[in-house]
Image 1 (cartoon, rainbow, N blue to C red):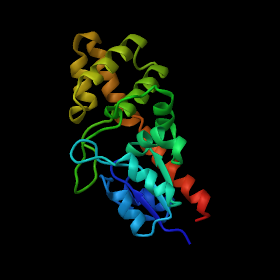
Image 2 (image 1 turned 45 degrees about the vertical axis):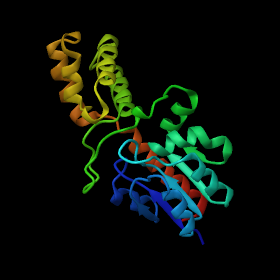
Image 3 (image 1 turned 30 degrees about the horizontal axis):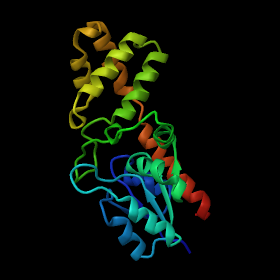
Image 4 (image 1 turned 90 degrees about the vertical axis):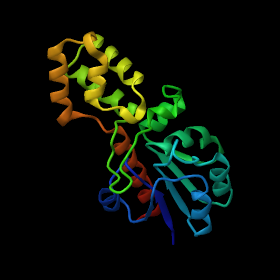
Length: 215
């Protein structure tokens, strides 16, 4: 019988997660939390969300300690993707596109997946840069923005400190680099079509765990 413990926060709401996988869900992991999960009898750990700057992040050595004890550690979406890209050769399993991008070197900084969220509700208060990348790609493919607009908006997004990244702030930061009518068209489009790659990867990780356990 498996005991599955998943560290989850703003990447995926709890109700949606529970519909995919029956597990014990804990808040975003901070340093020491994976060791406690192992002590609590976890046989599978899903690391999706973790703290970045507000507290000490999950350490590589605790992931390695869990793996050495025979615990299956699966990472995706956010902190999990970052750590899996660093630790997959040592036994951690990475799932999803964000993991792949870190592994390939397309993404380097933890700034790509960092955001701020309401600790009470788990609701995201800023937009992670990796989601913005996918949204801008979709917007260009659909003719909402030009390749030049895409480049200007991405540069603007990268210039905004991660807790303040929202689409309206990014458009404002882009300023005259994009036309006023493009401002309006993009902000109108993004309300319905923003891409949430982190959410998709979180779901994929839970589906993977469900698949290997037969839950």
